[in-house]
Length: 198
Image 1 (spheres, rainbow, N blue to C red):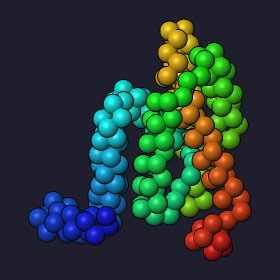
Image 2 (cartoon, rainbow, N blue to C red; image 1 turned 30 degrees about the vertical axis):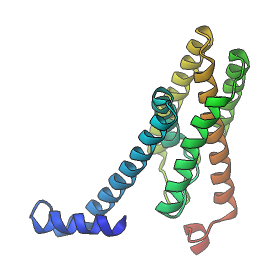
Image 3 (tube, rainbow, N blue to C red; image 1 turned 90 degrees about the vertical axis):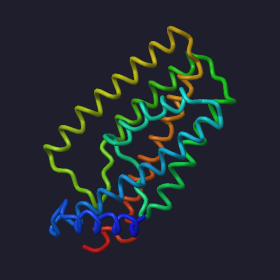
């Protein structure tokens, strides 16, 4: 992936679209775009294969904002991150395809998990420090998305949309688990971290 990003960066610099001084920024941008595109293609095929396109979309609506603002597990390589992301996405869709939980029980679990996520916040990667102003901004967004998810949960409960509620519960379970693991790694150190080097 890094090799492809380097080739693309060389190309846009050679064509005069960007300056040499911006090489690293564009290289990083291409890397992120390629990684996300590869993951998106996998998710589309998986959702279609399981005949669950709606559930696949709901996954991103709930998971992506939470993952962005609440934090979670950060792996050191693209390969590991990609594999875990694909496994998580596939597991969530597969579980909700076969599991059934009463709507009221799912909603109760959801509220409990939301409180856990709020208690665990913030979870920052040790190599990506966030200043006070950034943290205030992230927390406002984080709380808004928690409120949004609660409202979605209430609507699903009222309409007896058990499958969607189960999916949201599983997504929140994944968030809680990854936030807990990342906090543990931050506390006990990880290979190549700033904490270990200082």
